[in-house]
Length: 162
Ligand code: ADP
Picture 1 (cartoon, rainbow, N blue to C red):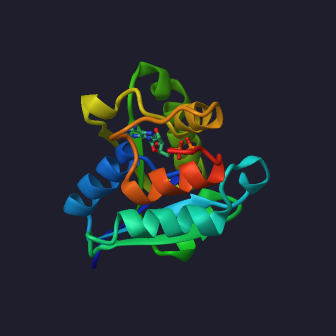
Picture 2 (picture 1 turned 135 degrees about the vertical axis):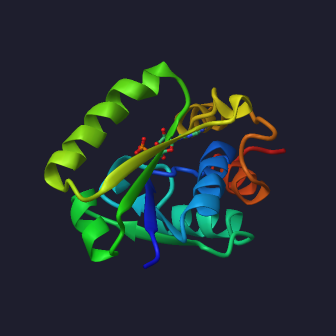
Picture 3 (picture 1 turned 45 degrees about the horizontal axis):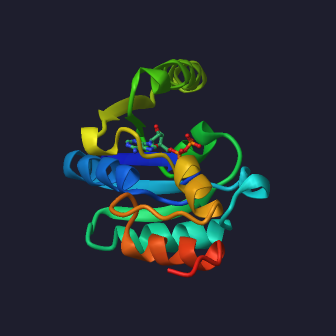
């Protein structure tokens, strides 16, 4: 039976750090579903549709990664997708506490689903969607932290003359 892994997150927008984690997960599991969280839509910079499109474009070179969106409890969605694994990325100790708590809570809800953590590449350890949004919001730009299609979308969204 093939092992399906979910990689859930806001991906607002997807960064090279996310892509690194998704690629490594795809090398281990049969299928990876990068799952864009819908219910944070209200406060998000990009719509779910835009976030999914950017993720699809950035990961089209990896055949066993699909992009989808979901709403509600992750565990319910995982069962619906017949996924037995949840992937999360770790950048620093500061990620750990929140991730640890969430993994334990998800295990309590669904003991048959396993959370796997993948450690980031040190060159992405400081990269977060929120810091990127903030830089572009104030008219700055940064290279090599997001794919080209995301860079263009950020420029367009924040109306920066590059
Ligand atoms: P959430 O809002 O659920 O934290 P994010 O889109 O911010 O969603 O992140 C999704 C997952 O990707 C989380 O596990 C997060 O730790 C991980 N992640 C975010 N940025 C990086 C990065 N630069 N390197 C590795 N993992 C990352």
